[in-house]
Image 1 (cartoon, rainbow, N blue to C red):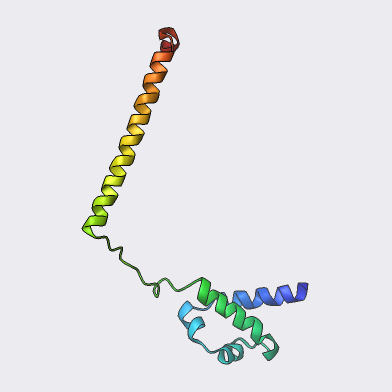
Image 2 (cartoon, rainbow, N blue to C red):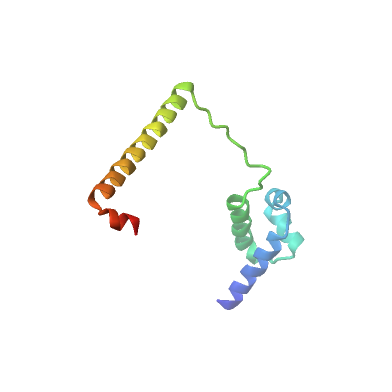
Length: 110
């Protein structure tokens, strides 16, 4: 098990050192030949290649999506935010008033 872990780590490090574009566009058999790994490790190399290409995508190839908000949605969001701020303000005002009314002046000044 320790030997397998060591081989897995060696393959991972070898593939990580490649550029994302080169690693993700190279065919498995070509990759095996270039790295000099035996055919018995093709499943492991394929699994690591897939993991690197799928879970760590090239930042250049990631598409940025624009958030599209209609004027109606924008107005609803602003009103919702305004309602939330007003509710927080009223709650603070009520709590502060309760604190002042229930406390003795001496306690407040201390």
